[in-house]
Amino acid sequence: MRVESKLALFKAVLSGDPKPDLTWKRAKGDMSDTERFHQKYDETTGEYTLLIPKVSGDDADTYKCYAHNEHGKAVCTATLNVIEVGFKKKKAVLEESDVGMTSSVLFNQSNLGQL
Image (cartoon, rainbow, N blue to C red; front, side, top):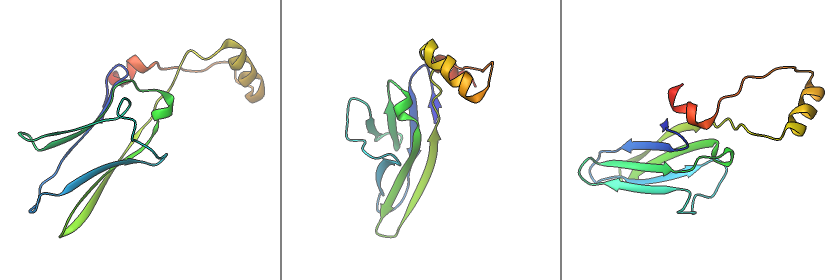
């Protein structure tokens, strides 16, 4: 999995005879919004792709790739962590006073691909 300036990309390559079926799922539920979750299959490479073009904090989750055919099944798990910045100063001051912190380290989404 990669994050490139607000883009999350998960890839899976499957093999088997008969060809396995693949399903992407996430722990927090629904992925039916085709504007948020793009699923593709490339016949030439055998690569399945799950693309999240505009990553937000709501997309932080555990994603799973399920493969199955008549001979068995397999699962692969990946976690997408998103750290958002730009929250309101009032909220930041409230959180600092509640926790007693005076400083924090922030990463913005455009830097995540470099970590």
